[in-house]
Image (cartoon, rainbow, N blue to C red; front, side):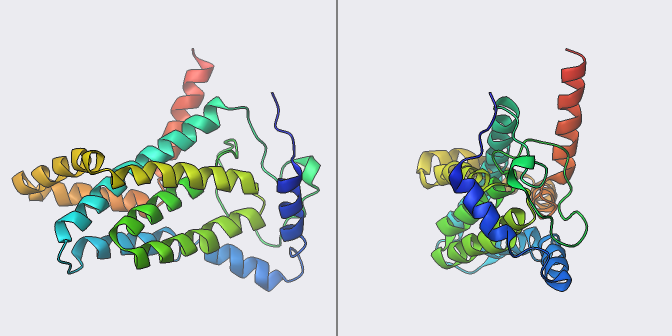
Length: 238
């Protein structure tokens, strides 16, 4: 089975691609901005830290959403990667000859490890994080959703790394997975374990939480690289 280029994807890709290569400065600035973790994952990580420490009459409830958000974001990434591996391979727009894609000025923006473009794991991660923040605070969540669209999804579309349906599917995976935290039982099953860990051994809990934030800030690149290497090794030596 192969992916057919549907009119919806082609229309949006072509419409956005018309803006490419009109200004070297614009293309380069957008690429630099989109690939700078200070403005992408770093900003969202900072919001998670704020959600953890902010003064609130429901502080423990907010923290339960933060803990469950970290775990469910990881789960969303696993689901997205599993779909990409199990579904038929989809070439990226800038590689596919059927889109007549005109690459913007500048070097490669996002490091690729030759995975299928469907669904977008970046969209899955950022929308899972945004949904988790939305459950803490609507203002934080709306900001995080807008951030995911402007700083993550639009650059991925502009530079030809994903089709619109890749991004939509990833966003649905992330939002749907993180929304499980709205169920008190699911959230409690995740966060209660974290709270007990914090109470019994704060000296190990907070370094572990820091590592989770570090993985988020680096967009899980180290973990994804290891997972990809293991997957290739398994395929070569069944």
